[in-house]
Image (cartoon, rainbow, N blue to C red; front, side, top):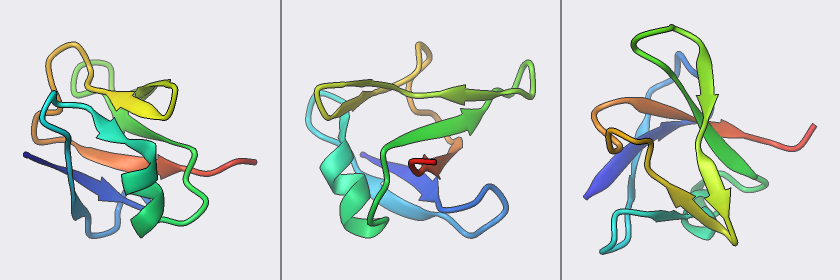
Length: 77
């Protein structure tokens, strides 16, 4: 399975592979987007940006799965 990830919300996304358990490694994201520290996405319901849970370098899918959303890279500020 792949998730769609973009550097900015309105840019063309690229597909990043997930692990067999449905998680995504932050190192996989950082390999394509150097310096990445996480992901966020726009909630289809509230239209607010939401962060993706990160535990020990592993990004966990939102409660409804990764779906067909575009995830945006977070960089340290």
